[in-house]
Length: 590
Image 1 (spheres, rainbow, N blue to C red):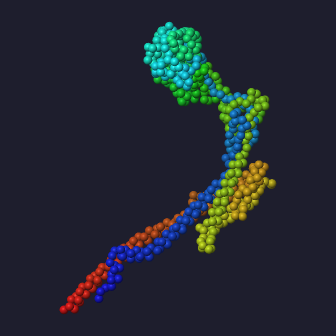
Image 2: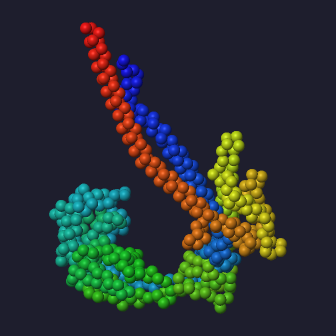
């Protein structure tokens, strides 16, 4: 008798064996699926409590801001304005005195200054009376006279202090100027300023006239807009501040050295006469810690140094250390101009009430004033600048609005998460949790109840300053006119409604604190403690799942071993059946 094919076929391939094992294991894994579903629910709860803590923490922060009685509280924020910011500006800090202040500025604070005792170049000089190149062009001194940009190409001869130069002898304009500058007889220095588009010719010797003449159809001086003739005295050309010091046109010759130094306010400034220009040295001064600003005034032909500090006690000290640059700049021995103090009055026309400040920026009664210009010559003048300092009521309103928004966020969240849907047969995470549903009720009660302990006549309900709770239990500033009227009438009364001992902000903060702030180092906040319990449940489930996975792995191997043995037995039975069938058939044929 042959074994049924349907029985043996079930074990005839590994794929069928795997199918049977998987079916067995699916039944075995049902407890793990249940535990994973429990984990999903627990993690959802964790997220819900985390979200709730965030909302409660935000509300607590907003409540603390409104309950703050320190000098930095929102109630001490100020606004400031000036009737003329070109004269005085003001910035009010927290707790600055509120009021209207008449500022009379008689004198600004200035710093000490020192400048060259005389012009830096006083030699006889001739210069272009107007721009040389046509239009907006400039002269390119590296090119020939014909191609350098003159209106007409200069030609003929030029005579300077008796020395004659033939223009056709020079390939470029610069070559001609170099020849003049190096000629001992000419004893002059000629250069071109491309920024001004002008030529300058200076006598090298002080107290000597400069004599120039020319010949030609288009002689050089005529094309350079310089009149031929004799020049006596100071030509007021100014120093070439962008030329290296050793070649600059100072009246006084620099000491024949490549390096030198000088002190300003005790800070040493070094220079090199072969690489530095006057502009470079001035920039080095300004970037140093000498605390001064130095510049060359071309119109005065002087170097001016101004202190960055201000006040009547401010000073500047200068001295050459090596070399003679300060002497060359006529600064050695120069007398400084002392700084001055700022002089002003506030709400007074009496000189006896004059305020003296060493700087133009100072703070009085919490307000920082910045003086920009004077506005009186005498304190009895009718002119003044009005500075107004007010309590920043808009900031208070903004904080109250934020507080209400955070309150509504908490209220809506607890309501949503504690709801029960009988139709869908679902419950919110907080459903039945008395601690949180009770918190919601207490928050709503606190927001709408009377605040006790306030002065008679002051608002003791939020609705008296325009804050109401609608039918959906949402709080909002529904009447801004009433709020504005209340805070304008008495900002302190509005403040007391929130930050007094029994004030709404403080009472709500006290309700929330146990839920989000640790009571001590050993006692967690309610929400954190709840999350810890849930987290432990999740961890326990993870541990159980891990242990069960190990057991199921063993169980799966057992199933496979048992099925493999069954398969071997069936294979042997089939083989024996086939052998018997063959033997029977062989006897039947005898």
